Length: 78
Image 1 (tube, rainbow, N blue to C red):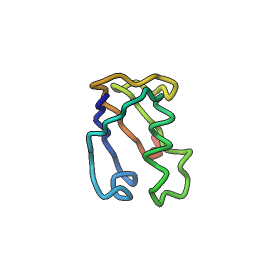
Image 2 (image 1 turned 45 degrees about the vertical axis):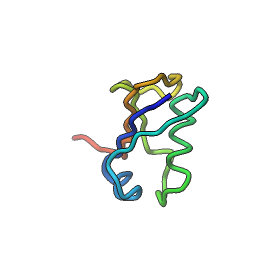
Image 3 (image 1 turned 120 degrees about the vertical axis):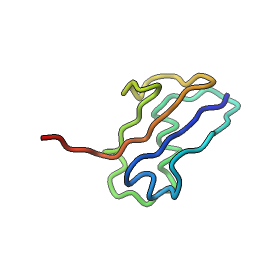
């Protein structure tokens, strides 16, 4: 299974890239992928990073081949 992972804001800065294609030989949930991606990054509050799969904010989704995943930093509105 291949998924495209896109990094935004401080997540992109910590990863030193804006996107990558990752390949897995087993199924993963979005939250498992998030943990794997953030494990090696120097981000103080990893729980504040949101994950979207195909523009849907739901970390319980089981990933499928071809999905687009975005790791989004905390953001504020006003």
